Length: 89
Length: 403
Length: 135
Image 1 (tube, chains in turn cyan, brown, green):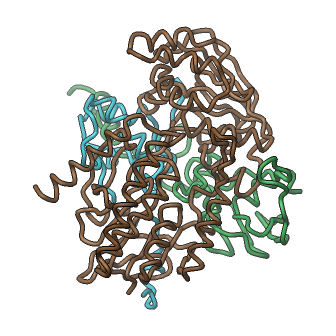
Image 2 (cartoon, chains in turn purple, brown, red):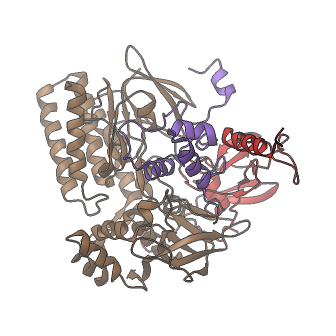
Image 3 (tube, one colour):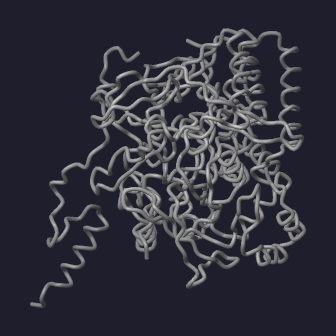
């Protein structure tokens, strides 16, 4: 089987995500912590819909109204220098 | 301190800015891209009456109007996070913190991926990426390519690429896996495709619409879908073929394509390679609502609207005081609907400032009617159940606000 | 040069070039046009690989073209992490592609890889336990 990368930033593949979901019957947050999917440079902005689709398929449950994986600020990477700037007003 | 800060200078954001400026509000519009217009910029399609919908021209009209009203529009600004303050909102950006009494999030939509093996190779891009390159930057994304994923958006963009003289081998589905299921099932795709049948000069697709009454006959339509695909503007659209792999070492060199059953299963032994140097992935659009999420706006998952959508009412207000949404963040629809929603949001924000309420209320009612009429008359509908989705959202809003 | 430009378009008309903008990418000189992003100027030259994955070295280019995926991040005038798709091309920009990083904690071939994730750690731990001889 060809490898299907889901999280491009951390190069986490479909098989690893599916296996983790099956083995641990876990939440999206736990998937992120266990596999690093969605934890890379883009902050999961690319793979999030794919992860949601995989969870829906594997769990057989429709997506909840609450967003499955909490959206954390900052929604774009910010350099520490930028945050530390005194003229940041 | 602005009366209103608008995030996103697309059709919704610009229309809202115009409406708010007409009521003399102190407005700032920010956008991450280097020019205003949002995804409207790339749009180019022929209406059923033969006229061209040219996104660049449509953006210009909005922009000129906004400029006449001395609207402050700043590009190249990314919002990182938002905090609620006693007086309104603090928006943290790469250009510092911006303060506003009211906030309109009009960030539009983003594309869902349809991950298949090899999709990280250079030369593979989202269909929207190809649209912007083609129509905005006037850059050919490759010599010959294939579109993976058949939906309203990808068919429209494939046509735009064709217009620009870009050679497309065909459109086909992504190989089915748990992440691509909704884009890889011929039955599901067929159903969606028939909604744009009226745009196609193709009898084969129109023929298909006769099968669309029940689920059983829908399967028949897929079964009898021609093996050679149907042609739209001379380009084959395959619902019974799937791209199983994108091949290449340093960039795209070819794709492997297979015949599939009506359920999307690969027919063994049918695989062949097609030489291409670019691939466009089309997994559909979802509302881009991350900024509404970080500020704690409640959400609803409504499939007809494209996924998770911030809760809002028909006036574009969210349950968070002073927070408004408009455009594709509220559900995937055409730019015309986004524009009408923007106007409505701008007026709703003006109402919070509380001047000449009778006249304003009248305008709001008209703007609401306008959104409904434009929705009903939409040439391109992204989801057949859009009205149903909209009323479910309305109910959710009242449940949350009035308990 | 700029051979990938769409000069004529049946609806949008002829491409009007206001001004040429010189820049360098990985030390080579190129020319873009006013209004270009870094990404469009490079793609117009047929350049598709903007970086490689920091760890695996797999090549990457533009993907979303709207600033979400960060696949097109490059170093501009010494500042890393700049999205080529959202950044306007300016005269004499020095643009560099993203390179593979050293992975000091990654073992070489013929050795067991250190776990990268907790799941891998557990897997290895289980494997080791199974291998332990019975006492």
